[in-house]
Length: 299
Image (cartoon, rainbow, N blue to C red; front, side, top):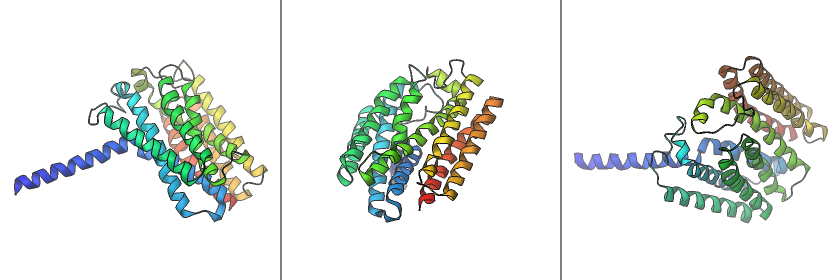
């Protein structure tokens, strides 16, 4: 009896560990934020006439494509992940998961996600999702070891989700789609650079330099956050001037942008980890606040 309970407990632990490993491979929390942006893009296009089934299908397809991108990223970086404290516990560096299993999982998720978005919506959405996956996994990921320009390259697939969601609803890439893309594109620079600032020493162990200046954690890097937050503030208010969003929605968008810019300015003034951490958490809050204000400001 005791032996049977021990075996059952071990099996349960094994299942839990496997679920945890796949969650880490897919970077579930990050993937959720990406899918959220895609859904916002879809709802912004459809307004109050959205199809709940389509929202669910978009979320599933988007999650699969994003998870595949993250999985391929970890497959390629499995050796350098061993060198960094923040990534050492991932399933591939610890060898809790073998390469073949990870490749198969990434392949199934990526292909399934692209097929779902193409079949249930339109070929343009499928092509954009494929571009997002391939550019993130096979261009941005290896480029990180070569140049900090990788952040600019990675911001392109990172900005595609709201555009993909919009295209799922409309089938076209128009001015509105480009605005959705542009706001998320600009947001990524202060987001990633604040993380790169905090993880500077860890990234350095693996030979990854993501800060915009070769001088590292200096004002030369910090000023870039101020520049991009300023551009983000301006671009985020364009929808108001084209009657895409009302006064109340634009007020929230402007307020969020000003606060985000203030955080970047404080980081530039002090150039320390404390203000970088505030900017990082601010970036996590800014994006959903801005996008929800954009969405509800239209309804």
